[in-house]
Length: 336
Image 1 (tube, helix red, strand yellow):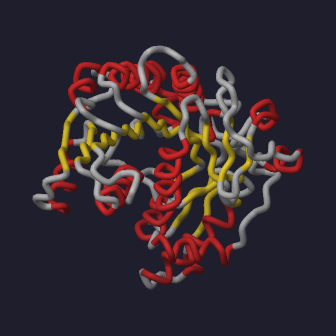
Image 2: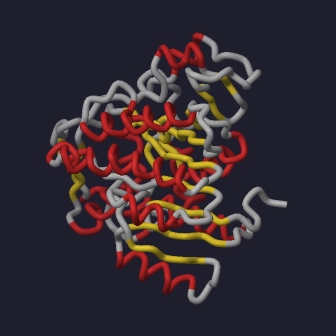
C-alpha cells in the first residue's frame, strides 16, 4: 500500500513545473484528495482541461501571503508540499521587499496554517542558493529554511512535522536555462551566455518528485534532506541544448552564434549544497544526505559524511557529468 493512498494532500505552488509532476505522480499513488493551490488562474485552467473531471482534484486560487486562505486550503489535510516562491534571481534582486513577503512571511503563514489545522507533515522545497547566499532569493530561502527547521524541532503540543528538501537547479523548469536557450536557438539563431565556466548542481523534475515522496516517509521534523545529484558545466549544457534543438528543428548549427554577456546581478560561479558546518553533522544515505535538527536528538544512525564528500559538495569541486550523460537526461526527460 502506498504511503499516500487515501491521504488528503495540499500542493502549494501546484501549477509550477515540479508541482504539476507531483500531482500526476500522487494521482497514481491513489491519493484521496489533491488540492492544487496557486495564484496562477490560467495555469489552473490548463490543468483542469488536462485532467477533466477527476473528482480527486481541487483547484484553489490563493496566495501564501494570505494566511486565512491557507487555513481554508489546509482543512482536513494530511500532507502539505510547500513549493511556492518568488524564484527568479533578477526579480528578487529588483523587488526585495516582495521576495520577503512571499518567501519569508508567506512561509511563516504556511507554518501557522498547518499547525492550526493539525496537518501531519509539511515539506518545504528550498534551493542550493540558500547556502552562503549572495542574492535576495538565496537569503529569503535561507530564512525560510530556518523557520522550518526551528518549527520542526519544536516539542510543543501540536503534532505537525516540518522538514526541508534542498534542491539544485531543476532541468526544464519554467525560466530555467534549457527552455530559455532553446527559445533563443529557434527564434534568434543567437545564444547569450553569462560565463561558460559556471558549474551547477542539476536535477530532473522526476528526480525532484521522487525525493519529495521519499522525504515524507523519512521526515521526523527539523531535518534538511539533500539529494545526491550530478553537476554540470554551463558550457557543456549550452552546447548540448544547441545541438539537440538544432537537430529537432532542422537548424544549421554552424549559423548559431554565442554572445558572452557577463554575470547577471546575484549570480555565482559555483553553487553549494551544504556549508562546512552542516557537512560536519550530515548523515549519508545511498541516495541523499540528511542534516538532522540542531535542536533534537539525532535518530539517524547512518555514517557521517567523509571529508572528501564535504569538499566535493561545491559544484566547482564536484565531478562534472559528460555531454553524453547530459544528452541521455534530455532524452529520458523529453526536455528538448
